[in-house]
Amino acid sequence: MLKGFAITPPVVGRISIGRVIEKNGKRLPEKDDQFTITTQVQNQDGWMLHPAHDVQLKRSEGAKLRTIQVMLPFNDPDLNLRVAYTQFDRQKGWPTVISDGTTCQRRTAKGMETIACAATQDCCLRQTDTKPYGRLYVKIGDEDDLGVFIFRTTSYNSIRTLAARLRYYAAVSGGRLATLPLELKLRGKSTTQSYRTPIYYVDLVIRDGLTLRDAIQEARRADAERLEQGFDQAALDEAARLGFGNGSFEETEDDLPTVAEEFFPQESDAKPAAPAAALGTMPQTLGDKLKEKLVPA
Image 1 (tube, one colour):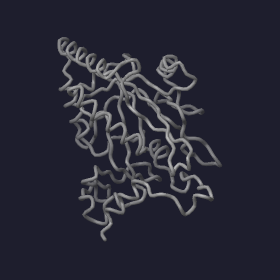
Image 2: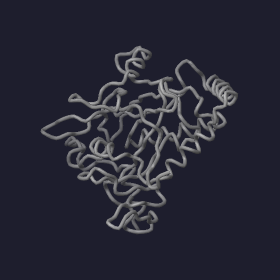
Image 3: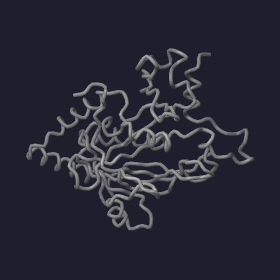
């Protein structure tokens, strides 16, 4: 295996709850209130819809796609959801630092450098443009045995919710995440920071029409059937673990500019103007509080 080159699951499509639009001559990210399932091909109008989008939309029986039936490729929660604090060089379109909250890997002129987080002023968590970046891998339908769809996000709400669900479902199912019938669900909430307007995040729940007990029984049945057929899920998880660990950065060079544009835009472009009544009273974000804790008294 080529060292320094992360081997990630083969992606056959994308899941998003937003898009990049042209506004005042600039390309800016815009949030949406529905899922969009796309291919990895863009045209002049943006990403082309994947056939799975229409299939899932018909199943949801709604005008907007707000639930997607999925399966997970791996039993290990940390393989299905990849999260790290990340900072991007927006001009070059590549990540410059990545951290798991304990150690930070930083790209420098001398190559990759590893430092301990919270131990030095150079830690990436102290820098204002560093934020959590998550990638969730899921399977939609049976079209491709090993191919996955990727959902990328920098939302604290989505990352925290998905991480919790994966851990809890792994625990109650006896580690059978890969055979548990699940669905992605779009949820809305409003906060002081959103000025009471709805913001949307992604949740992972038991498939509609099933109880948790039903889902666990189905996971056990499917797992036993796989074992009888010779499907080695443990070996697949181990292969994925080795692949992820083979490199520091998991995005391909082709994907990096798109990721930077959509999830790490220029701060001056990305921040909406605050209403006059809210000026001077903006609450701290979780990132702000974390950085404060890292600063020595």
